[in-house]
Length: 203
Image 1 (cartoon, one colour):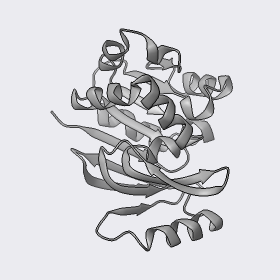
Image 2 (image 1 turned 90 degrees about the horizontal axis):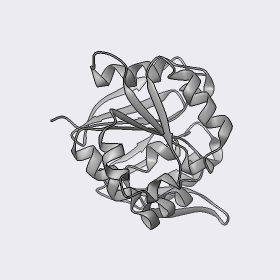
Image 3 (image 1 turned 180 degrees about the vertical axis):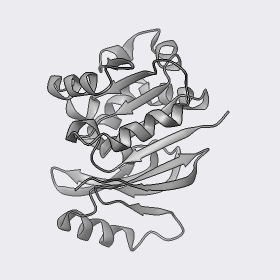
Image 4 (image 1 turned 60 degrees about the vertical axis):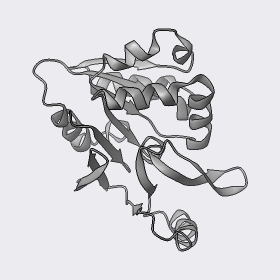
């Protein structure tokens, strides 16, 4: 069984640039509506963000899971029944803390091993990697990701302040894959190996 991860730096439904979302649906190769769920933990389950997701994927079988849902005894079965999990952007560190506190990090890893496609933008892109380096109240900080994919990812690399901070941090990390993506660049991993870098007509 193939395992897929799509790491999206920018664009997608939240920016009304659907190219990369169309690519994501094609990965599924499924006849009929695709069961796709949005995880908006990083944005505190912002209603407007969730609404945009439903509008973009209205032709499929969209749903969403909030932090409260993570505590359901049936959450593993619910996620395993999906075709795609789509994680939104926002505060990566806070999102990962909530996932670990509720055990949702393990739920996602189990679902991935069962063939559920993992996708996400910005925070939802970097979280799959071993190490994250992102904004905090004190500036930028290093923290542990889910560790499904080796190395680290920097989305929005076109932003000068982020690029300078990330480059300085990454310069001391030897022997670990480092990926830096501008807002029109995305990575498709199959079985934890990089299959393709997709450049989209975004910005």
